Image 1 (tube, rainbow, N blue to C red):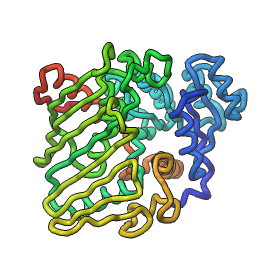
Image 2: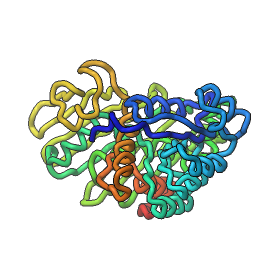
Image 3: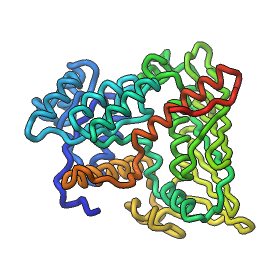
Image 4: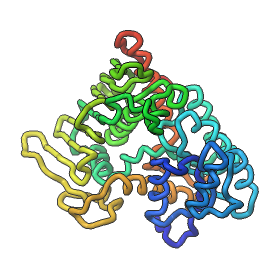
Length: 386
């Protein structure tokens, strides 16, 4: 779909004010393909900080809000109100914020994980269904070109029948008790009141699981988990080893850790089938390794040697230039923009969306719940239910 000539989507934002890393990422992603215009926001939990952040961003005074409920009510009422809202708050605020906008028919683009509890996730899913508005979850790694190619290759049968899925996401930034230094991100991500029951599994484990599911099309049915809080006094897990049983007899393993020195943002996926294997690493995202059974490894490159339409259609620059994190986010925002624009002309417009939806969010919360329950029961096998 050519969306270039369509009027920009008026976008609001809740959270993401001064010193908030992920808010800036969302704003860059929304601007990259020129489909959105940020026009309103409630950028902080305090009115003073929210209004100051709005001023920094050039938001008009009458579109700067101290409260997300006030924002939702007024934006739904005014003539040129927002069509979509980006929610970039800590996890425990996703449900109450999204609910206010969904019930007024405003599309939601929400950071992951979906919520902090399964109960809130189910309530949010009902709100999204009754609203009829679009709900997108920013598992941004699904937007990378070579991830899209891997997905396409598996669906076209290049690997044959899938047997094994190995995924890991390792970081080292929480190897010490950073949350006690006043570091904002560490503070809320290690707090069960704001983050939920999962630490590393909620923050990065859900990304790993979503990536594996997106690429392979296989959904986990049960798991066996061993969660640890290696840093003394930490309330949530900072390391997890998980065995997974997927549908159709596929087996898998998932490792998430934020206490692995030497790993910055090491998300890696390996998939093996009867006819070959694929390997992809987020820190080297322009490359996808394909190994047909009995043949040497083949290096496929983004927008270059071996790339197919699934990759080149979401690639912006020539081969050899780095392209990754911000562009992956932008691809999600552009996918959502295409769906919103389709709805402008037909409220019933539907289709297969490549961007993660509310259902992916529910699966992520079921994963966190099952992993926590399994670990508490000594690594018992637990079904994923939602």
